[in-house]
Length: 171
Ligand code: S3P
Image: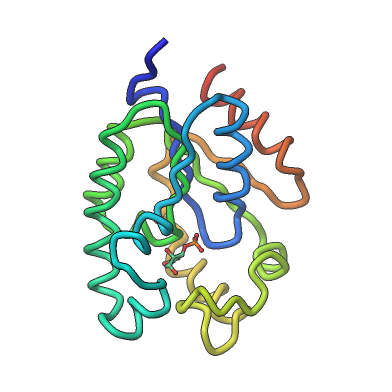
C-alpha cells in the first residue's frame, strides 16, 4: 500500500529530546524511510553544521533548513527527524502540519544535558551546554506548541516513546 503525506510522522523538539533515535526506531517499526533533516542539510551544503554556522552564519543555515524541509516533505511514507530550530519559522510549521502528524518531544534540562553533553557538533551549545540549553528552552517555550501531539521522553526507553507516538498517531 502506498503511504500518503498524512501518514508521515514528523518529530520536532529541542536538541537531545530523542528525535533521531526515536525516529530510527519508528521508521524501522513502520517500514518507513527515516529522513534526518540535519543530515540532508549537511549533504546539500557539502560541509558540517558547525562549518555552515561558522562560515555562512545561522541565517544561511535557517534558509537551507527551510528549503530542505520543503523538499523532503514532498515524500510520503517517511519519519522525519527535524533539527531543534526547524520550528522557528512559522512557514516551516505550516508546511509540517500540512504534510504529516507532528509530534513534539520534550525532556528535562538534566536529561537533555546527559544526552548531548558538550557536543561539538551543536554550535548553539558552544560556551557552556547547561546554560545554553536553559536559555534556548526558555526562548523556545512556545515554539513547539503547534504540534499535533506532545510526548515527554524523560526517563523513558526508545520503545516506550515509540509506542506512545504510535498510539497518538495511529490511535
Ligand atoms: C539546532 C539543532 C540541531 C541543528 C542545529 C541547530 C537548534 O539539531 O539543527 O545545530 O537550533 O536547536 P538537533 O536538534 O538534531 O540537535
